[in-house]
Length: 242
Image (cartoon, rainbow, N blue to C red; front, side):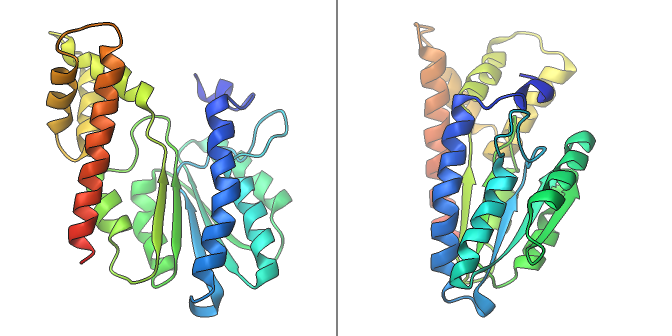
């Protein structure tokens, strides 16, 4: 789906993801903000979009604003950082936030890739609890940045990442591995997945799972890759957090 079509109406997956944000963000900020300095919590939306849909439904940034307003009743101070790579979406996002955000709420909008603004976000968070929502159209933040910089940042403050990893994208792009000749764009897609997964290990997992080429094997291969990715992130964060 194109960027324009995406914001015309919410798809079922978006409804589910936004339900998670709507319910979990207040829980995280209320609990972790109870012991943080000045009850402060930082919220990062790394792929913010334009803030909402053409039918008036709120997107993840406006849901974050609603959550920040809600937990303010319990003396929680949420500072929001929204990052968007598309210029038109960035401009529209700023407009919607100016209209929706209460005057006392601190929020920042940055234009560009989340990778380029991650260090700034971490400086703002410092020893503050951080909740990050990463919902990209394709592959997201690179593995080393996700694990080493974000999940294992050098602080005892709680850090959690809500990452949407689209299995259908892995299935579709993994199908390129069967091609004998790839163009430059397809090669770059596979290289991007290498950076996201932290190496090319996923290629062997995908191909070996799909070896029999039976019905549904591509979907099973994508699930196998995601399961292995989750295990690797867990193992890496367990070691680096000790």
